[in-house]
Amino acid sequence: MRVVTRDSNGNILTVKGSYDTIQEAINAGTTENGDVVQVSSNGKTPYYENISFGKALTLEGGYDSSTWKRHYKNPSKPGMIADDYETIIDGGNKGRVVLCSAQTRNVRITIDGFTIRNGYRHHVSYPPGIDGEGGGIYAVAARNSSITISNNVITNNTAHLYGGGICAKARDQSQIVISGNFITANKITGKESSYSNHLLGEGGGIWSRAESESQIIISGNSIVGNDGCVRGGGIYTADRPTTISNNLISENQVTRTYSCTARGAVTLCGGEGGGIFTHDFAGLICNNSILKNKGSSVGGMQSNLSSGVPSTSICNNLIEGNDGKGLDVYAYEYKQTDVKIQNNIIKDNKKDGGFSLGLQSSNAIFHNNLISGNERDAYFATAGGNVGLIYSSLVMSNNTIEENIYTSIRNGCGGGGVAIFNDKRSNVVFSHNI
Image (cartoon, rainbow, N blue to C red; front, side):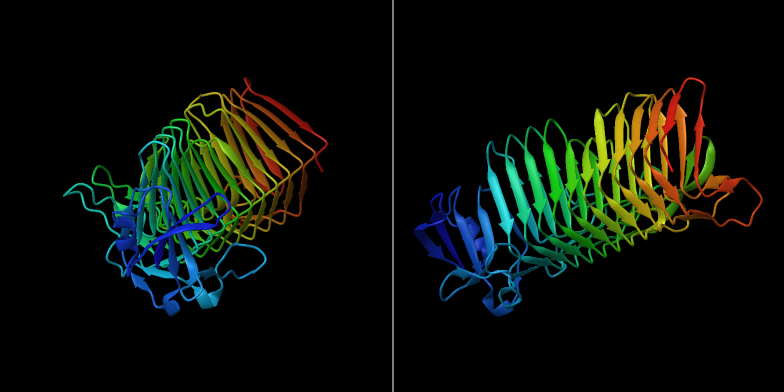
């Protein structure tokens, strides 16, 4: 591999040196902010490394070391690397594969074109610092910096707590972009909380948090076959703002549960958001295909909106064939929240119905959605959807609600359409639905 400088058009200005390992290239005294580390495929022989850095570097895989030409699956369109030039960084299950920390002001980091595999990040209470986060990649951006993770295969990585494939944290007006990756077969093993009997473990594919006027963008990825333990098989994201768009999120799962107390009663928690789980979320979740995911309670997507988050839009998604409820949205803690759920197809989800929407002191628009072919087997529930409102407002219009099936043979109330429960202080407009 080698380290180079490039001009704004991508032309090589200087070749600084050649190295045997990626970490050696990063650490070299001549490697400076703005440089590019070009890594050859090495004949597909893995680089067995656990790398870490905070310099403003671009790391690129997929090169032929004889010509230093980069090879893509689609030669006319830069993106994923051609199979014959796969560039593998293998963590050997000895630690996370990549740690990148952009915490000096205005640092720009890019990781592009690698296969990142066999990372492992465990958690212990002592000594501190063994955090159980980010088996494949752990990315932290702060102080107006940015990290881009693009066109990688991220597979077979494990973490105890958060982010089997990727754990991403942005704060202080920073940005992290996760785009064009294939994220598969990563998992969270989970760990019992030392303070309660809760089971911890979230984000099999991606775990992310954006705060302090920062932003995370998750776009154009294939997130397939990951295990998030308790919440967020494909994606778990918290805080705001975050954009989740144009992703394939398929065959992920969260099936672990634990006993908890909710509203004074002992029940089971966990198994929430086989495809996506969001918490304290504000942003966009649009144009995704959320297919064939599995959750003990919510198979497709669960979005919890608390602490008065400003606005959330869930639009143009295909939520289909999930094992568990298709979509669950809950705005709570009596803080003003605006939710728009528009132009989605929610169909053929099994066991727990199409959707549920719970609002407290919030406003929602549920418009032009197709709710079709969903099934539910539960006491006092409907297969299409369930809505509950306290001090809230709902406009439900132009939706098609068809062929949903209530399958319970137990005593109780149920049906195939939509049930709306509201107190006298709430307002519902229900119009032009089929």
